[in-house]
Length: 266
Image (cartoon, rainbow, N blue to C red; front, side, top):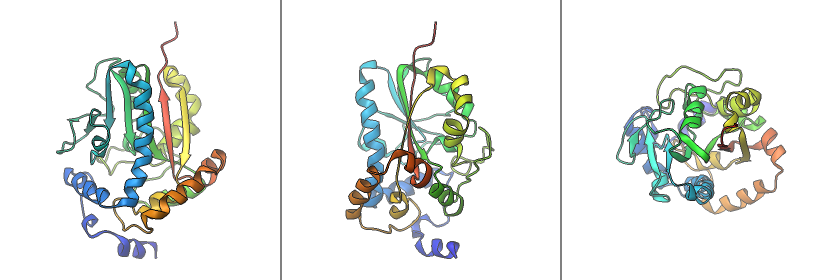
């Protein structure tokens, strides 16, 4: 039944595309730019990026986005370097998140939108963050949450893996094909003590939970929007008054993870 409904709602341009290909990035860019409701969802990410940009600008150094895909961040912040594992016209450079080409302490900010849960070795990625971020630098990640509602959505309504019982690694099956939507929860919630022990300079972590239905109603990059853009602000206002504890446990589809790097202990 769910599969039949998904076929009906799927956008024609999203049918049969290779999600790991550069062509998929261009198709997704066109879809996003033509979906006002989805663009409003992206504004939540852009606003969070703007907060970090203002906070870290005095540090100098470089701001980098990993897994840029459609490269939309350039439409708002043209000085941020965009990157992905494959090149396209909207990407500045190819970067491997587990083997960054940047020098030690050269990055003031790293941004990831739905990227961490596609990185097949979280420990190596966090080691690279620790190496490349300068003291005071910030990594900002928007990732799937693991509330009760989210677990249902990511397991049964989404094509990516959602395996809360897995570890910090999974098979590297492709840029988008390889995934575990539960990975951010695994690292920053289930295994938080292991994270703190392994990365003491990165253990200043703040998490905000958001989105009770916004992404679903937008249709994402594969399906038709299910609501007009005018209802977005009302739904966003409602979710802002829900306590964060309830969002985390019951409602939230996404989380904004902010990791700040402190100076090493002497």
